[in-house]
Image (cartoon, rainbow, N blue to C red; front, side, top):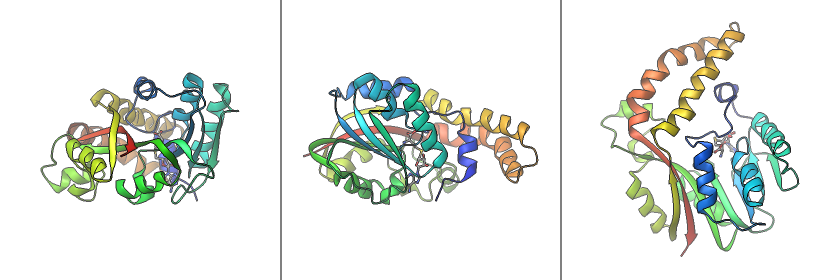
Length: 248
Ligand code: SAH
């Protein structure tokens, strides 16, 4: 049970595995006005940057669950580096169906709503860990511009147009599920570049060091094609944001 190796190569330098910069992550933490001692659960916590920096900056505590052994190890190292290892715990495991032992104040899934089979299922999953009146965070893509064709849809990592919604419809979906949207911080094209363009340098450096690796041909082909493909499709059409929700 682990994340395919190509992911950890592509995102080897990333602390945030999403189109957020550290500034945007900090802005979200500030926007939420987190009280010291806030208890958080982060499903698909990646390299743990959200819990670790918010533990440092807002003195929250929390647990992250992620299926990647490498990202989980990095998250533990980051907690030690920031001096918050007493406040945060990172568990290697499958977050599908994961429910906290004790209800938490803040339950998050940032950029991994497939763990609940989509937005609605992930909201329902997180709700099971949340105390009454708690806050939920969902990180999710949306269409900045309607995709004109199936080629664009697939280049944005969707199978069908309806896999994502335009921003107003995504917000309406949270309402229809019974939640107030109480905050949001959105990616922009520059923060998308920090996520996606940073992958190219990681791949190039890895290729230079590992020309004979079994993944080399696949990653070489990706590096040759991805920058133009990203500029043409994903950078223009795909938005991304984190939405803070409270049950009505
Ligand atoms: N929330 C983090 C990571 C987002 S990337 C951040 O914003 O930086 C998506 C993450 O989902 C990866 O770390 C991957 O390892 C994790 N993941 C994928 N499937 C998972 C599953 N079934 N259970 C737990 N984590 C999973």
